[in-house]
Image (cartoon, rainbow, N blue to C red; front, side, top):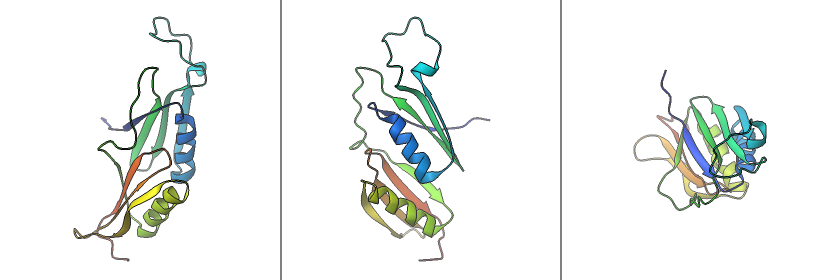
Length: 142
């Protein structure tokens, strides 16, 4: 069955980021460092054995994947036009998650409140610069 996952290339701190996301959201975390892998002949660079080659956090409804960016890659995490949209069934759980991201060094961009389109919606940057949006459709509870 085809799946689609979000992939985030972090600038050397993906282990910290994925362990944080696991703590916040739960789910099943799998981290593989270059040191965990057999030698790869033909690599265009010598990877740091402690760098994350691939990480996955499997949550109900989706997967966040990522790793440390390759040398020479200088991607901007915060300030790009994207967000991770996490749709939940529970207003209080979504409110708790957005507040946790803000309290742990992020910032709320849009308070989690009823939206004009009939759901609850809010946005926050986390401490790693990742932009999160939270939505609870047809929320009857304020």
